[in-house]
Length: 354
Image 1 (tube, rainbow, N blue to C red):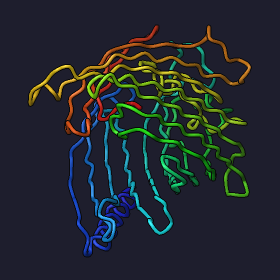
Image 2 (cartoon, rainbow, N blue to C red):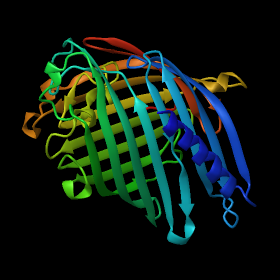
Image 3 (tube, helix red, strand yellow):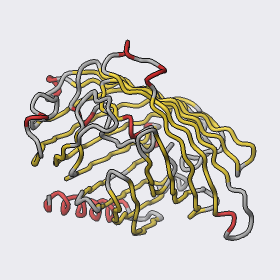
Image 4 (cartoon, rainbow, N blue to C red):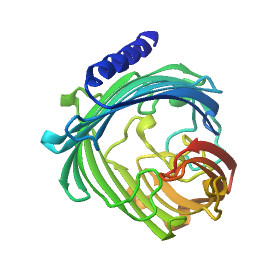
């Protein structure tokens, strides 16, 4: 673990020094603090190193590094650079993550929101690559690569996880492609426009993977504004696996329907629909930074697509407070309180959920 941490820091410094030559650079280090029911309170540091291309100063490459540690003794190290390749009309996004992450297991295809919980600790190293090619205005073609090594180093109840996919030490390797249409006016706080992403990935033994399956995802978003300070945001999300994936890679309903724990409902397939009203009603130097939100989330996880049923959708609703760190870009600190049938939860973080 220490070796991985050192490698990421050294890589960040080396690449920074190489690419900084004769280019306009920006460097900053920020502390991070947040809270969720999965992590408790957590803190960390994130370093941003950005530099403009000599001949295209409007394009900035990123070399970013994040370290976080949670109240529940969860550790994450993440190195996520982004490079523009104007000669190929492309952008390359790289993401390397190491996690030692004590987690909760409620079973696969669980339907009981009050199911018994078992603790386990996975140790995982993941490398993701997204080559994004600019096809036309607001339209992009993607080529994906995904590799992950995962091993459970501690489990509270070995018997309950014995026959679950992903219980053993495994290596996951896949490739894929996708297409995106993105007319949003901002990635941090869109007030108008559409976002649509369709992605197909395949994981195969001939790629070195211990699991064989395909994964399909569809992510649709729409943003409608009365004016810049009153925005309606909508998202529809669908995910499907052709065969059981490691449970850690299953569809997690709690990632889309707030107030439910992320690991509570794990399934092969899932659908979610979310709606949110975001508004900043005040003026003035301080008042313009303060905003609010109202949200409603609903969705269903299922083992078989034929099990899709509106009567089985789970719902949550709630309200939130926003504080804009940067008013022009509306990068917000987010404080959300949500309720569902079985639980209520608070989440404190940066940026919008979608």
